[in-house]
Length: 494
Image (cartoon, rainbow, N blue to C red; front, top):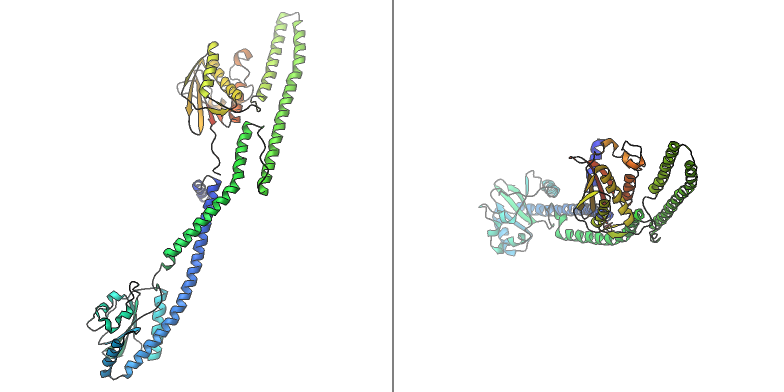
């Protein structure tokens, strides 16, 4: 059950809009629709209850009228019944169509539901009680199929003067109530009338076009007003999102404006305090390592002078080599900490031009670099971006003899792939090489293996630019380094 629930939640979350504004609009639409459906359900229930009450009272009144008509015709001599019927037809304007037939006329009965059950029940109860009869036929028919006489003539075929026009209410064509009672053996009283209740058997009367139009207008009005309100609420969040992205690139960015609703103002104040604390900690770290580097230079220089005074040439050479290695480690540690100049301004650079410049420098040292592909200018910090690519190209040329560079540009990201032709790196070692001072080259000499800081600094810079660096081995041999850098996206859709 829990697994199914989690799977359902994941599917639901994937189907939701990606922006905050879209989710707010979806919530408003669902809320308005639910409120409209609930109000229509309550309204329909009340209308139905009121209609049933009205129909109950009306059907009882008509049933009593039919009972009176039945008693009247019972009291008439047989030879006078047709005379009275002719007079009724000549008078016109009556609510009833009455005839006396020799048998029960078949009726195409229509309708169902509580309304019909209520009417039929009232007629049978009242007529049975008032007339003391058991067989009461109560049915509903359409005017176009209703037959009225022994010869089953249609109601539409009768002369207009016979009064049948009172039962024909075109174009509404409401159902006609037909009651047939046995006056005596072989004689049936036939009474047809209308119940003035609108949409008597219409199951979908609450979904009329007017109500749907009104509901649609309410929905559109609520959505329009909600969009205006949501836009004003999400605009500060969009500013906060832009500031958070910019914080990774530039700690000296201006602080957020501390205004708006209380929650938004508190968030902006907290963000500004966080930015200030990060800036102070970074500055303090740089000052600390600069001070350490500066303080270590003096004792290293003194030790180097004393080493030069040693009489044993072999010991002197070993001692100086150790001091050189110590000096390189100090400089490497400082370079690792200051690997990304946080105070550098962002500029638009052409990645291919930077790569070509670095390739020319390596060519002077015997390195071979080939470049394929084009890329649009990218907003980066120039020195940091150049240092990142320089470290990767130098590693590729040093360990793999030559480097093949491919640029793959897109609307949302730029990928730079650098492949060398060296031995590659085992999969279990690929994350380890990004750690400071880690070198997979077996020699302990810094002159052959470097300081082990190049890849770490390159990844630090790439991540500070919002991207990352990944490693894998090429199928044909050599290491493949992928540098992925994002292009700025419009986040105003919040």
